Image (tube, rainbow, N blue to C red; front, side, top):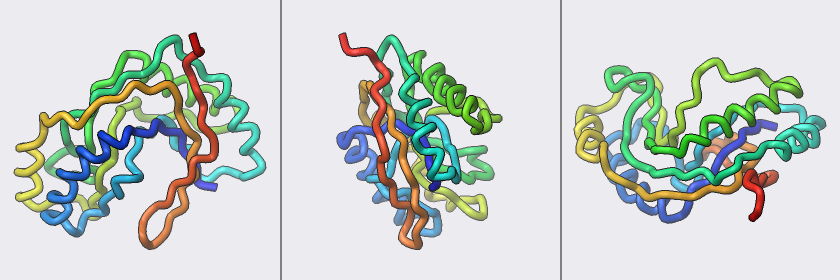
Length: 186
């Protein structure tokens, strides 16, 4: 099973992003564009996991807590590692201070059951497209600059999800295995 832990984004944010993404796909049709319904904020990528370990994974994730919901303000566009040699086109966000500790808690509890810790620091984003080989048409770079400070909506999040990803020729297909509330009900 190919698994990851993520935050779902609201349909309003998806709808807002889909307007710009429809235009940008035409400019750079060779990019591997993420379908709008698949947009999410990855907190931890587990990769291929033994299905027999699923119960242990779910048990570990049930222990993750935060005293507050996470707030996300989706804004901006950019590239990893850089605009000069982009591999990933992303949608940015401003997040409440508790998002990073939440991701670290998820990574820590999964590390205790055998998953490696992340080598890179956590950078919340929405992967919008991948470019292989790296590079993009000048028209796409110009369009991204014009929309780099656009606001796409916001969310208040109280749960994260364990998701299975099945890679298909038509793109990744995601199935939520279980949702995990991380804020105690008041």
